[in-house]
Amino acid sequence: MKNLNYSFLNSKKVNPEDPSVVSNDFSTSLGALILGLVFLLGVPGNLFIVWSILARTRQRSVTTLLILNLACADGFLMALTIFFIIYLAKQTWVFGDIMCKGLFYLCNTNMYASIFLITLMSVHRMVIVVLPKRLSSLVSRKIVRWVIVGTWALVLVIAIPSLVFRDVRDDNADMNRTRLVCAPNHTLATHVRFQYAFETVSGFILPYAVIITSYVLILRRLRQIKFRRKVRSENLILAIVVMFGLFWLPYHVINMLEVAAQWYPENSPKRLVLEKITKSSRAVTSALAFISSCANPVLYTFAGKSYIKQNGFAFMARLFEGTSLDQSETKRSKDTVELSNVDSTNDSGTPTLLNGEKRCMNFVHKRELPESENL
Image 1 (spheres, rainbow, N blue to C red):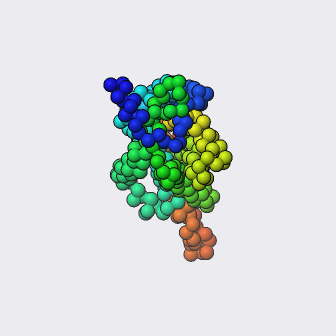
Image 2: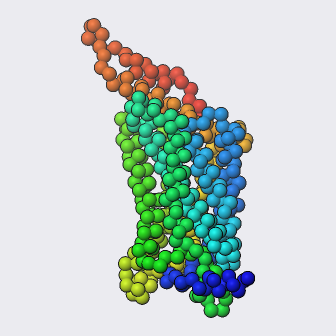
Image 3: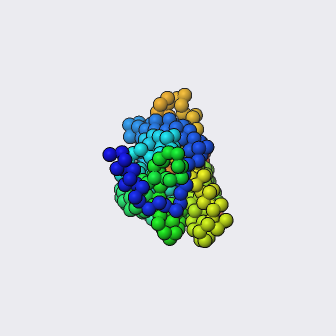
């Protein structure tokens, strides 16, 4: 049976993209080490986030709901890293063709889900801060739940190219051993350009354009608010955005180098150099991308470290509860500014103290802000 399987794999067309990403000893060893650390941190870390939100968080804001979905996606991906650790350590694929397609499809699904959920966080903060109350109040948790369901349906569809353009075959790069690889099965240069360009544009460039636009609008609005303060939600979401970008940027740079290589004639010096760079770097950059899924629990721990002594294992739940307070106070600050901008004078021509100004004074001088609202 083993010989039959190998003959079947050898009968397939050898992909011109060989040698494979697992033929470089240093790259695969470093990738396996990174993934091992990711597994040890990511699985328990994301499970702890899910437990904190479902079992200990009493007030769940929209931001908390999005963080819950992000933790579920990341935690599921972290559970799959054990297969890739074995793949990199053995430098051969031992799990069959179905698992090859399925595992990489789930990885791409997680990539899209993560960046789209982070984009939704940024857009939601923009809606709360920038839009008038009558519009921002329409963004209820029920609507957000439906948007999240639609987001998951969308990522399951747009990740399909990773399911189609991948299979198991014999590497043929090493004559001394049989090396099975789970690799892209691009038979045409257009397939390479389509998959990697589509992945980078839809999974990185466009979402980050939306995120940057959202934060530019938020900052412009905050400059107009006289009584303003930085709230936890904006700081936390911004940190998540930056963290995701740092770890996924090298992966997408390699994607673009792979696309660029296809524009040069076959066997041209520039194409050979670009292909060598992409093949030697793919394992490491993919492993770095996995780090983003285990980095968020560490990030939340640093954000909520001031509550560990007081709340113990419930510190993260206390952190997430603060996002509900942040959201309500942002709306209250918007109402205050809108009312305070209305001109009003009494019969004698002396300006009266406006309701908005009174509310501002009460908000600043009388309300005791809980410690949890500051990072």
